[in-house]
Image (cartoon, rainbow, N blue to C red; front, side, top):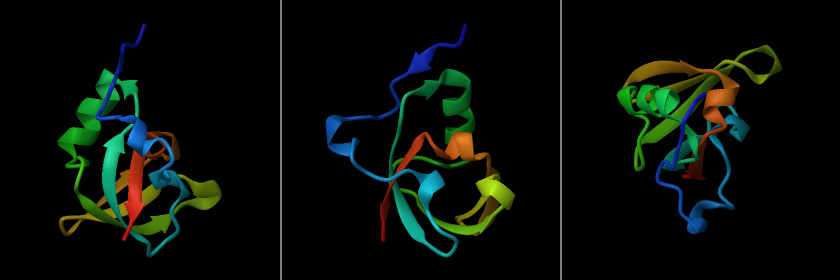
Length: 91
């Protein structure tokens, strides 16, 4: 059974859009990571996807997954289900 972890979620973030809903070319700042399995949280943090990081959506696969993002000059790929845990603020 997977353990859910509260990943920097506060009530002020509940209405913010999710990374998986952003369009190609859109720049956003990560504001929080929604509740997610501990393993996924470790993966996202190890990739540098933490609150305050600025990312740009560079490409989306067919049917919306995977999502490629540019972070600190590197291109990362996330499944849409993983990006659905990342709350963002458009820049």
